[in-house]
Length: 293
Image 1 (cartoon, rainbow, N blue to C red):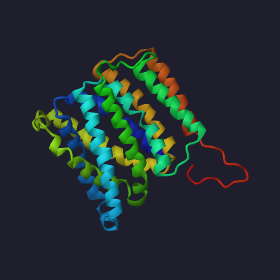
Image 2: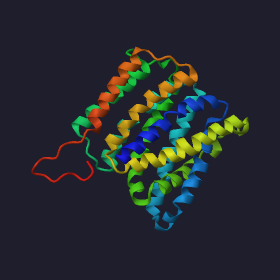
Image 3: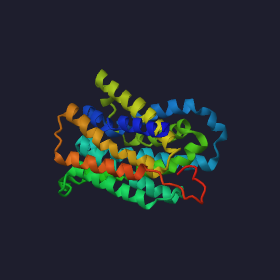
Image 4: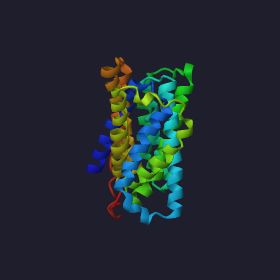
């Protein structure tokens, strides 16, 4: 139960990212990504530094690739889509929250995890609920397609990061794995930063960046991979479907967004998808119970 609780707390924290980022749109998106991940990575590495002596060269290469995929590629696209393309916070959260589909599919190939029919239906219903919450019952308004495409690319690579990081977390722990991936991945932001001035524009800006770095990034990733390490990937990542719901509610109070009927219909679909995805299968009488179903 505590592992699911850790994931839920993470989703609540991550639901604030798009809203908070709207208050610091004057900061270069690559600089914002660097400031989110590099200091947090250093802190996490300091906590998990004892794992360095156990780190093998193949695992170092694997974590380097993981950092490039899950930090550099993911959040270059994420922050550019959110800041430069002016996506609404609720829309960005909705698109990014489709990543459990790609996490579950990646886990099938990377971790040999089974994807049962019931969970697959739950995943597909979750996508449908997210679509209704974000876009209603009409087509996606792709008049400005670059923003949604960037956010879509971000959720694909994030899904790969979550699935790929699961085996390393089991081996080295969430502090070391996230810390090393954060430091390696964030270094590649440096040549992409065009303006360094925005980060120190005001005390409020510094406070918002600190919140994104320490809570949503540092604490969030540790809690998420800690929880995900002990539950089925499809079940754990499906809780991510709550993110667009929470983010949309926050956007109403913080940014003045208006929620329509489609929000509440999508919410009902999302919760139904969660009951399918999180429900445990009953073991057959003649078989032994699966340890981590």
